[in-house]
Length: 247
Image (cartoon, rainbow, N blue to C red):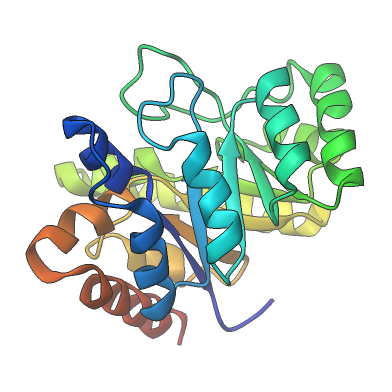
């Protein structure tokens, strides 16, 4: 386990802001380049079925212009598989997706869909993509993720973050212990462990301190906070908080 934890910056909501007016600004690719300059170890972008924020052209431009790895989030559909196989990003992260949701609400149901997901993942892995599954902190889902051929799991941290924000100390602690246990469980299976969803300056420390978690992916908070302080300042502060917790 590395002492250095990676920070992946999700730039989806720069595209949300752009699309609110239907123009070309602000440019999510420019945000990705600023994030790299500020110390991001990778860029995450979710091409949703309804294209509500990131567009196909954004993914193509990111592939051409960024120098850090692209983590391409997508649903496990034939359309998205074809796009990923055409672009061959560094990593593909499969996430659950519903049109009516505001944001990803939970983890992927892997245990109940193993045969399909194994067949879906195989060509992506053969194309050289690292395949990650965004899952709940649940042993059953982690074991299934290993069986279907994923090399990475990203643990959904949303419940922990929500409890932390609400000031529900006992529930936040219980959820943190669940994540801690499952991070160790997944690591012992041979999976690389990531985490993400809802992370902020105030709640990132305990997760950053977990040695089994190799990477945290953070987006909405960083983009929102950058309105007040600038993207480079915000990312630099997040990196420092993560490293301080790690140390």
